[in-house]
Structures are given as structure tokens and as C-alpha cells.
Length: 539
Ligand code: PEP
Ligand code: MG
View (spheres, rainbow, N blue to C red):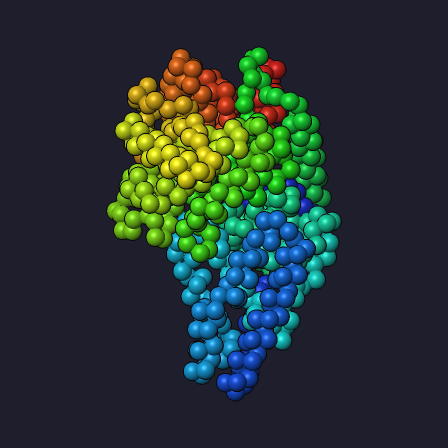
């Protein structure tokens, strides 16, 4: 916190870029009131009614929200429809627990389970569960579970905000979200980004004061009861942001990006099909990375062939003739998957992850390869393997894939072997790049940096050392790009540094001409290339 003379300023982490100035409204779950328990039968009846009421409210919200938001709400509905889970709560009530006590303890147990997951995606589901817990408790306590009234354009401040509460707020007049805790990878952050609502998380403790607030999603600050000077500076920053967004989006509509006369291919990274709904995605030259392991995080265990095929096929249809690069499951390391990854490894980042794990579990890998081989006939598909160290791993993957294709064809199912490539994210692969007979290479700079710099990428304490511009990392990138140029093999980079304008000059100078970024970064990256190309700086 910085204490200003007139207004107090707090700094957090950016979850969604943008600016908001409006009344400050504190929102809390409000589930701490008292409730008097009735008989065992009354308690069971009250919980049944509360579940029905909550299901109705969530279904209504899902119908209005659509898309990804509806999917988040489906997660809550699925839990309410999970008979085993609900049955256990009614059993606790029949043994003497009050409805709210039984409900809370069952949900708290689930939340603790999800919270102990190392995977950020699973962790982020905690707020969905907390939301469901609080909605039902609020109904049980006579609160109806309805959302508090929020004035339009308000800066909403909460400890954490569940997605369904976010969806109940009318954001049509703008506004912003300031969370004392929260995470940039939570579902509510994804919703805020998708709707262009500025959001700052991890603001820490904020006093219960302040009638108005300035929220700067870019600088990650919240200023309470701002002075005239704070307001003036805020408006200035907002105007610069508005102008730069407008010109970046105008550049996005131009057909191609080029630097010193050479075409730069700009692709997007997606984690699920819904990411293609982003307004800027349509301007991409294709998909440079689809992280399929997120399919493994869906409820109901490992996805079957049809479920996977539907996802890959939807992506191929969206791309039409554009290039699509799908990465096979990159589970393990920081992405544990129950029933797939290996528990208890002393050092999972150096363990059986990525292609190593897939080759160790061919019965799971073959299902994915079948779905991919079927999707390949739809268009311009490339498939790449993650975490490859040695050429024989790549060859084993290719052999298995070819066998899968043969089997499908023998069954009379349309299938083909797509172009096969590898992620270059292990230093050994980057150093011995010429020994791989892959059709293309995609540099995973997030992991390559982790292994070259010997810094766990999820350890915040090492952030200052995790410098993407470290010369050792750039040297490996340049060598890979140079090999691609000489051998006529396409080389792209799909790690986070591709979406960081500060890294662009270095990446272009390393010889890269294909970059894959999140759709939300596409406009800014294209604009930065344009500026660099015309001799300007980073802007
Ligand atoms: C990378 O390692 O740079 C990468 C793109 O993959 P992920 O971040 O999913 O490991
Ligand atoms: Mg990686």
C-alpha cells in the first residue's frame, strides 16, 4: 500500500486490463447469520427446497449467460445432480446435523480437496464451489440467494467473487472488480477478461472506508476517495490506454504482420474450444498451440475418444483452411491428473511428464491419437509432442500414431497421420535439434526457461531470476530458429514471452517468424511488430 495525502492507493495483481471509476461497493457472501434448526424431517425438506431453488436460479443464469459462463455454471449444476454426493449430506442430516451444517461441511470438504490440487485450473474451481455453498446457505437462512443490488458502473470490492455473482451484476455501464484475494487464473478472471471488465486481485487488506474508487487494471492499483490530482492522472492513463487499444485493434484488421519485409505469422494459443469466442481470435493466422491436457480436468475422468474428437473437430472447423497445431497431453509436472500421472515423484518437473508419460500409458495415449487422426482429415492439422528429450521418444510417438491410423483405416474410419513436430522445451532437445526428424518445432519458452535457468516456474520467489531475456535462453532460441531456417523446417514460439512486447525485438532478432500468443495479446503484438518494422520503439 502507498498512503497518499488525499487518497489511499493499493497495489495488487492484474487479472483483466482496463480502467473503472465509480462508487465503491463492498460485496460479501453474508452467510454468517444464525439459523434455527427444525426436526430431522424439516431439515431434510429445507435442504431439498434450497437445492431446487438454487438449481432454478443457476439454470436461469446459464440461459442468459451462454458460452463459457454457462459451462462454469454447469459445473455447479452437475454437483447438485450428483446423487452420491447429495445422498451423503441427507444421511448426515438424518443422523442429526442441521441442513446448513451438513451442507457446509460437505462443500468445505470438496473445496479443501480442490484447493490442495497443484493445478491452477482445479484450484480455480474452489470459488465455483464456494459460490454454490454460499448460495444454498443464503437460501436456507431465508436470504433467497439473490444478488445484492449494485449501482451501475461501480467498482465492486470483495474478498473473492464467485463466477455466478459476477454474472448477476449488470456490467453494461462498465465498472470494475477489486478482489482482496482471488487469482488471475480463476474463472471469474476469465469472465472479466472476456467481457472487458477491469479486474485486480490480491489487493490484501483494505479498510472499510471509501465512497468512490479508481481501478487501474493495467497498473494493478485501487485508489480510494481519490484526490483531484489522482483523478487527473488516472484519466490521462485511461486515455492513453483507450487510444492504444483503438489503434492496435485497427492494425489487427490488416491482413498480415511483417517485419523488415518478412511475413510474421501470428497464431493463437487456446486451452479449450471456447477460447475461440474471443473477439480478436478471428484475426489470427491459425492456432499455434492447443493445450489438450485441459480436457483431462473435466469432470467424469479421462475423456473418451468421442469427447476428444468433438473438441478437435470444432477447432478444425473454426480454423477452416488455417493451420492448427494441437499438442498431445502435457500432464505431469505442475499439471497432475488423477488416474494418469504418477503420484509421489520427488521432482515431478523432472519426472514422468509430457510425452514420457504418454508413452508409458499407451492405452490412454492411443485414445487421444485416434481422435486426432480422425480430426486430421478435416483440414490443416499438425500435432506436436511436449517435453521431448531424445529423438527416440519422438520416433516412438510417431510409430504409435502410425499404428493407430492404420487400425482406424482398417476399421473403415476416415483418418490420417498429420504432420508431426515437437515442443522444444528441454535444453537437450534445443542443443541437439538437428538430430530430430520432426516436420516442425515449437519452442516452449516457459519450460525451456525453467530448465535452462534451473528455476521452478511456479515459484514466485524466483521470479527475478526467471528472465526471458537471459542470454542463455536467447542463445537456445536463436540456435533452434537458425536450424529451422537452414533445414527448411518451420519453427515457432508459443511460450508466454511471445505475448510480451518487451521480448519481441529479441525474438525477431533470433530469427523467429512465427509466434503464438493468447488472443487477448494479439492486437498489441501485431501493433508492436508494426512499430518495430517502421523503425519505432516498443511504444
Ligand atoms: C511452454 O512451456 O512454453 C509452453 C508453451 O507450454 P506450457 O506453458 O503449457 O508448459
Ligand atoms: Mg511447456
